[in-house]
Length: 440
Image (cartoon, rainbow, N blue to C red; front, side, top):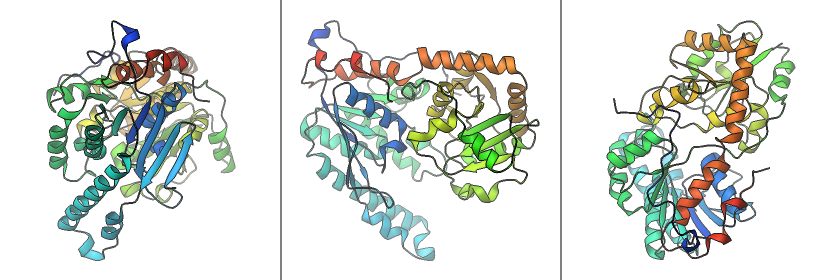
C-alpha cells in the first residue's frame, strides 16, 4: 500500500505559488474554463470556484456539452460567469444502434473514438475564440482541447484533476488508454490542482507532474447553518414519526455502498430513519423500486445543487461511503463531507487513511468499514442515542466549517497560485483575495 497522509489533511503548496514582491505579481482577469459536463452545477468545485473568481474581479467563460432537454447553447450562470455548450452528434448515433450492434466492445471503442474526436474538434474551434488570459481544463477528457487552446493563445494552462480519471471504478472504459493519455499530456500543464494530498503525490510520483500539485479541498462557500424542515416534512407526509434523520446525498449506486446503507437501516434504533437523495445508477437506476417497506427509508430524487443545503440542514447525521475498488475511492475527496460539516451534521465515513485522521482526529464523526451494515448501524445508533456526543460533534463541525474548511479559505491559496502564473496581465491590487465574499 502506498504511503498515505492521515494527519488531518496537511496543506500542500505548489512551489512558487507566492511571491516575495507582491506588487510585481500580475494575475489573469479572464478565464477560459473547459469541461465535458452539461451543467457547471454538476461539478461543485468548478461551480464554486467560478463563483468566487467572478466575485473577486475575474470573468469566467465556461465551455461544456449539450445534455438533455433544457440546456441552452449559451447561458449566463451568474454575472461574469457564462457557459457555452456544444452538441456531440456521434454519441447519439451510437446510442441509437439496435441490439448486439450497439452493445459490444468494438462499437464501444468506436463510440469513444468518434465522440472524443468530435468533442475536441468542436470545443477547440469554439474555445479558441475566447480572449482569455488563462485556460482551465476540468478533468481529463477536456485536457487535450484545453492544452491546444492554451498553446495557440500562448496562455498558461491549469489542470483541475477533480478525479483520478483512469482509476474511477468499473464504469470507466479503456482505463489503460486514459492513464497513458494523461501521462503524455501532463508535461504541458503549468499548474495542477487536486482535492486531496495523496492524489497530489500520485500525480507527481507516478504521472510525472513537474511539481507537487496544489491541493484545494472540495469545500463549498461558507453558509450559516439554519433549521430545516424539508426531510421532516417528507417523512411526516408519509405518516412516519422520526426523532433522528440520517442522510445520504450523492450518487446512488452500489459503488457508493448504498446496498449496505439500506441494509443498515433495518438495525437503526426506534425513531431513526434514513433519507437518500440523488440520482440512481446501475442496479440502483430506479431507487424507489428498491426501497424497503415500513417507511424507515425514504428516497428523494435529485435535488438541484443550489437547494441541496436546505435538505442537508434538516438532517441530524450525514453518511458518505465509497467501496474500496480503486484508488479514486480509497483516496476519496468528497465535497459532501464539508457540506455536512457546514450544516452541523456529525458524519459517518469509510475507515480509509485520508478520512480517519480528519474525521475522528477532529471528533466530527465515526469511521467504519463501509461494507459492514452492522458497523454502519452501530455508528448511527451510537451518535443518535447520545445527545451529548452528537452535540459535541455538531459544534466541532460548525466551528471547523466556519474557521477553516470553507471555500473562502481555500480560494485564497488558489488565487495566489493563479497570480504567480506566467503571462499575467493585470496588477494584483485589481483582483485581490480580500474581494471574496460568501455566496448568498
